[in-house]
Image 1 (cartoon, rainbow, N blue to C red):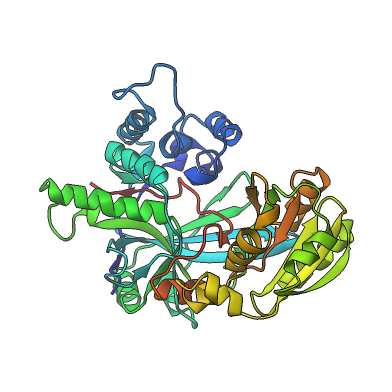
Image 2: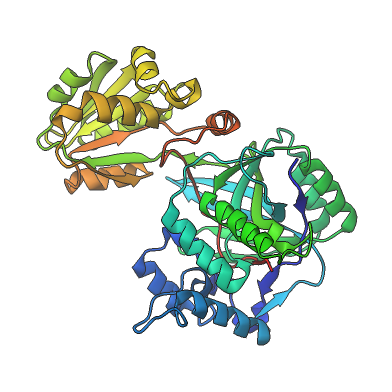
Length: 433
């Protein structure tokens, strides 16, 4: 079962760096060049210099973004910009955020979690990974010897027993507070009571963990650990390389939000609602619910409130109409995706990709390209700018879908889930050597 432990994290000394808000950064995979530059300017100690150091002219094998990240890390530790905590701790992490006018509060805790290969224990992935990001993160791990950004793990706990126990160790403590570039308020407390740490480790040892975000980092951690083992460099079962930095959140946490990932598709020039209906009618019940912003609002409501994943919505940019489509039967999906399980086949994103885009609409496609957004407002803006030919709204996946598919040792289709907000880099770092 999962081995979850307290650890001596490495953190910024706020007396040295000033506001914690100035030194935090999002994870590497959501940082564009403009945000990277903004973070560089925020503080000479901003964790962007570790997490995603920018290329410089004349870079080589001996001087690269990875070697610079390692050098900054060494210098900041030497100058006490970064300090290792004196006691092992679980780090309670709370994020307060807004989505479309509604406030949410998500809370969990950072811990060290023993790495185990997928399929051999009780840690389960739900997404596929790519070679490029794993090579990038491995180079960073090798250069720095640190987990700089956390993996996001979820565990079943309907009564919220684990977090309540962790929070026994933070009573009357004042949190560190940071606000990120999206306005998310981040708070951090240290839970150091040895009795609490022991009890939490025991409680978590009984629970599976499902990776919500950070699959590339988790697999990279495994490879880093295996390389050290092959080289005879592991000191034993408690070697730091056997573990990864993970944020653990109850699957029942009221602030846990999975946003849908809508598709904005180019490659159907001139497609109208009438032509769309002609293609989809054999498999879907169809209803045009409106035009323009009013149609989008009705379409978004239909997908968000659907009891099942079998309701999709489509905006045809050529005529400005919005169509809601409800799947009539599972029969065709069962044939087209017979190599996947029923939970995978029932996902809205699976139905959209396999049945709609790759089957029913395939004869109309010309040089398809897809972009991904999460909010109805983002869809509205793109449609207004005619940035796509077909806007596809999907219902949000639930934690039940993640658990069912991951437990069956399957991975969900790409861009199936978007856990918002992202976990920040810079709240706490974890040495892995």
